[in-house]
Image (cartoon, rainbow, N blue to C red; front, side, top):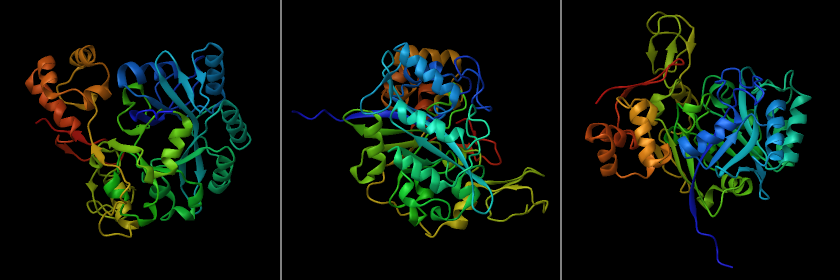
Length: 395
């Protein structure tokens, strides 16, 4: 039998749900418009994503939504794992964001994904007995990271260290200097870089050299879906294929990680909450006002814990493409965006496939040039810090 051809699949593996279909709150900080139905529609018709990590699928209300959608044939459980929305051809990778206490203070988020409805039900039950409110996302869980890892291994699932370097709920940014101080490396499938770091930064930690890196949006609204994503090279997309691609980075099936410049992220530099100064020193007081109310920046934290002077990436590491989402591009308003979608379909197509000359024909040379700079990571910006994104400057 002839092998299936390799295709490129666009995946955002970290998307939250704001409300269940019945209106119950799920992720408190997420938009009420971020329902499972809207996630599926936006993934296909607006963003152009082939796969979505539905990170709140194990909450009781969303699990109920998934069962109802299977009953309605709105979703189909795939034999190789995952739930397919057949009308939109979008694969949902179901899971949970689990918050665990660090060993010496702080807490970290882990993304856990499973392949079947029965495994999702088991995950939901496991969390229900260890959380105060398992109807909500990202709840503190009464378990150790190793207990979680062992359970995920029993389910033959995926465990990802979410936004690993951020000062809020990041394993390296908020809890420990070394992964093994919180979780055994054998339980970890991949590391999510987060909005304020990239491959070049993360590969200054030698202990990460054997792990896959992924870039995801951590979307709390529909518009933020796909602001960071990764590209897979696979014969077909399903949970099993995705898991094995993450487990075996030497197979080179993660073809590309795409994300913001780290400086554009909300926590790249350190930030003084007293006077608003942004700085790039690894100190715990403000050099301007001497206050200690500091939000530690990702760059500063990495400098403090890195064991390499320079970044060294393993041969299997895919390229990292710095790219700016369409909604951030100066001069690209809603009408022009609608025009682009009318001409070229989805954001993934516009950012990755459409030729510059075709963009010029659709929206004119000035705006087309800005879009081309954005998709090649060539726009100028001021860095972000303390919960504030970096700001693009007009060319």
